[in-house]
Length: 613
Image (cartoon, rainbow, N blue to C red):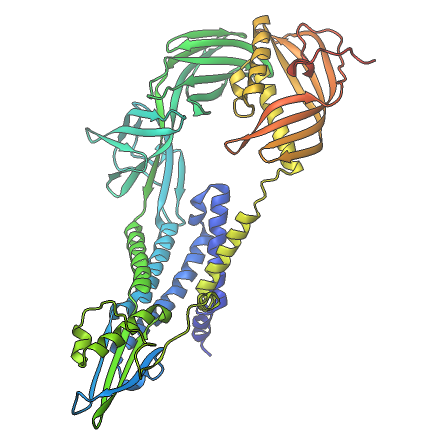
């Protein structure tokens, strides 16, 4: 017994089609959640696309057979006995013999479903071919850097299941990066001048540069780079540190040096995209700050343990994406057919008309019918106009020639006219019609799930989220104290708390010390939220020590303190920022004297209490 009929029945099964749609939705959800759309190049997605293509092929074949049968099927008077719009009436005789006229309008609407499903099939085939043979790549390029025509020139490769890695067929050089920002800090424009084959070309974000069968795109990521030369024990190392945006035109990056040293770089790019002339450098060893310098290109800095770094340059860098996809034209064609088919289904509805005049001596009986292909209730007014036009022009030819106009006479006002019209549209009938197709059922289920997720997204902050907010604040602020870098706290504090921390960290730098703090334990006692304000009460244990800038030597006593704190958060632009912190109870401080009040009493404008025995 052949298995083919069973396989075809399975591919056309409504449950199987719904399963395919759910699988596609799951792939989309995974790609969106992880922000990694390369899941669409995995063998699993390729197999799913092949199954969907097989199911759609059967659907398209069935749609074509229906289209051919509907297009060639002749209309007869008997076809209108079940028409949703019918009217019969008598009038004085105008014809000596029977007259009949049957015609159709908007026959092209029959092809809407076939065109729509054909477009879907092409889209699925394009997706399958892309998953198999397309290749994408990404790399970060410095100004005046040349990319070799090799796959190794691209740092990130994302080939399809059966595709070779992406590579250009010629050299390409990034000549210049130009950028501008809005007053609020968002990127306004970014353009790259690229040299290819001895000529310069310019591309912007969302534009492409075609090189043979390859396409090159500019991403939104860019920034200044620091070309660093480090010298240690006679060994020279050269590298480029790409600074990433950290908001408000600030760009940051870091580099591991010899002897456990770590260099933190920061630079600023103004609204006009002016290249920075200097870079701010902080050198750390562990939690100790060893140096803080503002250095121009060409400057050098000697560090402990015979380490020396030199800034060779500050060029811009930009991120490029490369793509090779031979099925792209198929995807564009599929999208065009899908939109065209959807427009045809909703805007071109085939209408069949029938007018029959039967002489009855001095009178005659007239039968008028209208049979829409779908959406019958929408054509009630059209049927009324047809009756009015026929009543005012006693000839069948007049029905076709009379321009459609507004007539005061309605079906109910014309004496002797008996008409059958469908009832008004009811929402339940719409839902029933939409749920009649498995694909539509799956679409409604997915839509309902998305709606439920959206409506169910509670803006209330849970205890776990509150703990994460407090932990993030403490991590960022602790690092700002270690580096003596107040700008690190910008993403987590509001103006009030930011102003307070600016003064505290600045005073420590003036004294030549930094604070090394470590959170030992954290317990969220309670949370209270009113609209955009959040209060979080915690119990915390901390360890503190002061370190001298330049050597990292401990200054004064170390301390372990216990606090009960209340954090006051404010929601600003969908981000929870700390606006104020207060002690909920008097703190317990371990050390009795400090070169500068290092415990949390200094953080919150509270006098340092006496240490408890």
